[in-house]
Image 1 (cartoon, one colour):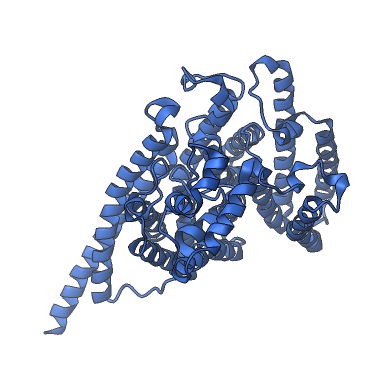
Image 2 (tube, one colour; image 1 turned 45 degrees about the horizontal axis):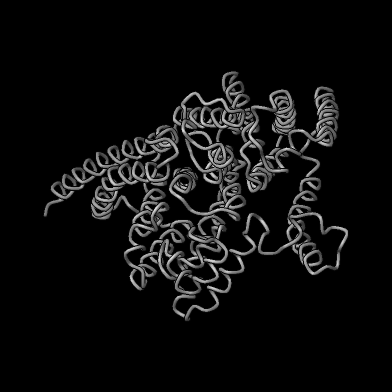
Amino acid sequence: MSKNKKKKQKNILLEVTNSLIKILQLDAMVFIFLILCIFPFYYQNKYYNMGEAKYLFFRYVSTGCLGIFAALWILSLIIGRKSHTEKRRPSVIDWFVLAYGGTVWISYLFSDYKETALWGYGGWYVGLVTQMFFVLIYFLVSRFWVKNKIILVAGSGVASIVFLLGVMHRFLLDPLELYLQLDSFYYPLFLSTIGQATWYSSYLCTVFSIGLYFYWNGEKTWERIFGGWFTVIGFATMVTQNSDSAFIGFLLILFVFFWFSFSSNTYFKRFLEILLMGLLTFRCIGILQIIFSERTVELEPLSIFASQSPFMMIPLVLIGVFYYFVCKADKGGGWEIQKYQKVRKAFLWVLVASLPISIILIYFVTTGSLESLKGVGYLNFDKYWGNARGFTWMFTADLFLQFPLFNKMFGVGPDCYAPAALDFNHEVLWAQWGNDVLTNAHNEWFTALIFFGIVGLIAYGGIFISGAARFAKKAYKEPFLVALTACILGYMGHNFFCYQQVVCTPFIFLFIGMGEGILRKE
């Protein structure tokens, strides 16, 4: 073959590859828009089939967009190899996602509950098909997402409306009539267009960082105004959404922004402004709850404490005074927050130490060694702890320990917790829950251990840990990675007490894909 003919063939392959890439970029943009901007609003028969409706929307959108992606991506890779344009090696996140996908398949193929494992348990639907959608979401977005501020603003705008509806529902304002013909007993359990309160809090902790980023990093006036609105309404719904685990997610989100705020005086002042806005919002919500007490949905004690306790005035006043002196020092010149790196490290050590200290306190209180703290429910671990998570976690540990070696390594199949648990000890479950079915461990990482075993848990956890580490390392060059790091840690912290579901988990794979896409384009 002549050189000219080879060159012409290579040029044709390059043109085809470029055309495929443009189609895939459009496919990625359409998918991201549908998930960020349409999916949160979508429902059919109000709360009566919210989970089913959300799942079907996700499945149809994923089948279309991800099906096109899978076919064209394979074709583009083949052509790219032939034209010698595909040279990039997989990243550590890529390997963890691939390992996770492979483990899910092994778990499914050797499952004793294949019918459940394929689509997932009814009402939850996180079986093999959904898990493969999660994997494809990551690769579609990481390879073909083109950073676009407009779609991020649109997605955050949608989230802010979802949050506003959530706040309104806590004061029995129901413009969409979602509570119509719903018994008042269920008011605390459902809100906004997301549905169940735990789904809502998981969505909140996953997407909040994106809108917060616009205030923290905004260069234009409209970005600051939009980010400020989003921040206020986000804190308002956080203190009214009625899930204690959201406070842990928010704490981790704020810590990430706190950590990176030590890179400049501007970032640090904006972080303090975020805290002031949050605490003032808490106080305003508390005042509204007192004024309109007859219209206020009853919430958990932690939420009421955050919004109404006079003790919350202490951090508000202290941060306000501190902010005043920071602004004064910054205006005077010569003061640089970068000089105080030891302060943020001290806060990191406090955060890290809080986990073992909490475990130690729980142990001593539970065993009766610290009677003085017996009244603190969070420290007294029994089967009623954490809305019966104590029972669920102890039961799950017993379930895992009785697995044969293969199941310990690869689990019982995606979304097969319920049938495995019933086979293990249905009498205990009946005594605790009656006709209600326990479908997961109410801890995403513990549930992954049952679904996919030790190998799957390592692969799944590796996606989040490697993602957070890679994004944080490069965040000083690309500030949007700060928001994505916060998304990951917020999701991980919240879902230590929650679970995978199609209402929220697609978002975290999408955001991790965005972060990897940014790193690939460096």
